[in-house]
Length: 145
Image 1 (cartoon, one colour):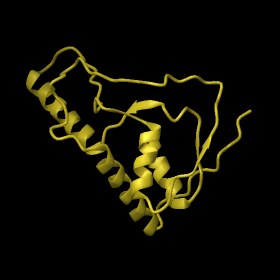
Image 2 (cartoon, helix red, strand yellow):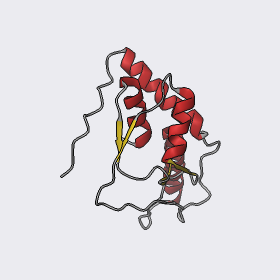
Image 3 (tube, rainbow, N blue to C red):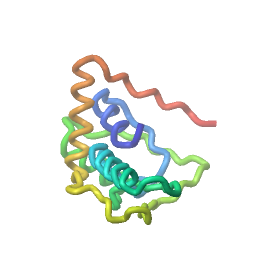
Image 4 (cartoon, rainbow, N blue to C red):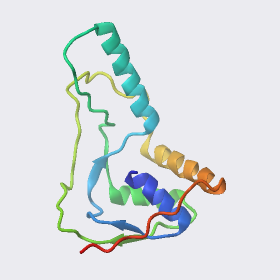
């Protein structure tokens, strides 16, 4: 699962979340309903087009946010602040990844879900799962050799 859902789970279980990249790491976040909408519109276009060459469509929001921004939004919506364990690993990931699709660039989410609303949605879904006894606790951080 992704950073947002793992952070929600760690907040609800009041456990620290290990983070192995800097908090200024920037990624593209898209809400599942927006990704589904874009995917369906692409499939409809492909169906109208008929047989042809295969295409690869990048489904992304086109808006980037840092891990620190995500954590800040959680601090505003959650009943208590997220706890993190920050650690560096030998693996270097790029600090900024930006995605832009050149296939059907006109197919974007019709009214994109704002990041705070998407985070709230994920958090409330996980609250419901916890209340129903269906949200497993996060895995304990494993030390890396």
